[in-house]
Image 1 (tube, rainbow, N blue to C red):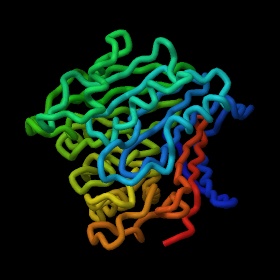
Image 2 (image 1 turned 45 degrees about the vertical axis):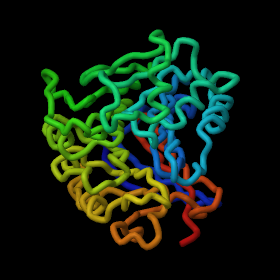
Image 3 (image 1 turned 60 degrees about the vertical axis):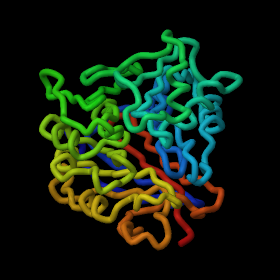
Length: 348
């Protein structure tokens, strides 16, 4: 059963929360400790998403930027994870997924995995796709670090593989390395030999009635191939930071997200999020047949870049632009009702 959506906006000091009502939950609402939480860390131009299942088992999808020229992250991933670990009963960072090998997704992975005291479980697993870096002849330093990790902690993930976080929470792989799952088997999309983005790992997080999409820097070729085989989701972590080469129309119509969350940085030189891509997302009709997605942009676009239009965003999470306050976006859910929260933007 798909959830029926309504919304109530709740304002607090530098915070906004949106409560979304859905299918009738059990008579006794689940306690706070059995909620799934997903945090989108403000790492400027990069991706970093922390998932904590009700059991306390956690998965990290990407680890933020280490790319030359990018602004410093407003959120330090190690400090953020350590703070949540200390506040979460049974916290255990068991799984790490590197969606692909671009530095803005894996640049801080070594910081997380080498943190002292350790953040990861003794038997943690790092998931990557089959095959190595394809974009350039000289891989980024972070890719070399991944290659050095012991085989005991590394695993290749392929379409249809499932990571079980326990308590009914799963991460299912829908695409990896240019292959995708069509419901019966794995199919391959013809990609350019140097298309690192198109080889991204794409996952759907599921907990009861709630689903969320994480696709790294996936582009329209794989998105379009996947479209007929996708369920609708509640949250779309916008592919490739809102690039115009992603968020293909048929793909969006399949997902029908109520929320689109875009991680991009204010100093990026790529025009992210692209005005045309955002307009495509906002044009989607969601499951209720009436509403359109809310587009939550983590940071302002680069000032003066005509490829972007901040006015299209439903909200911009970072409260102080280039200042030090982070624009962390969080989603919490008991699998029926969902709360999406972000700091309130107060500057231009």
